[in-house]
Image 1 (cartoon, helix red, strand yellow):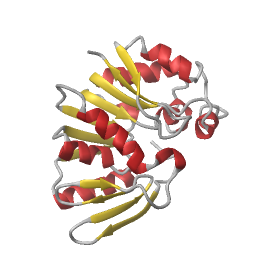
Image 2 (tube, helix red, strand yellow):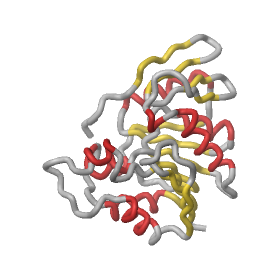
Image 3 (cartoon, helix red, strand yellow):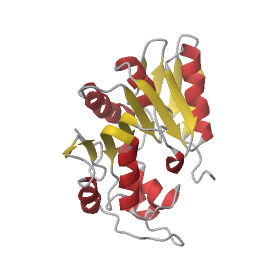
Length: 226
């Protein structure tokens, strides 16, 4: 699959006892911990520390989970911290090999027990107790893949998780979402809106609760099948 957007990797610096990773995600990795960094150049909708706090708190509160996957894992922050903080069997997927190379470099240096794979959303066949999908759904609709149909995207997310889904939904007010879900030349088979997403999610999950928002136009939800 052709990469549509160059990887946002600004620097990866090895200081011996730790590695500093800066890009779309910003963190410092050590042998026994990975620390999100909330300073420096960051997108308003993707403050690393703020978003990580939401996801880490959600994962910490989920009962009876052993396996976890982050879809569109970027530079691997959530996967590595899930392995270290919650002792989960953690896997990260991203369609961009450049991100996966950084993830593997960091986790191999410190022996962090997790797995990364360069695989697009449509080719993932495994299922997990919990899946996170953050700022991804508008890419899938028309940008990096071309579903053009929220119903198919929500159904596929549901098949990937046995129990819980943590999902960030850049809604129709978000400038990037508005641009990418209306790309010319792509077949649009259904409405892209937060209301439609919640309606469809309600067909696959027993409960849906909103988590904190890093940005007003990017709500985050915890969805449960149990």
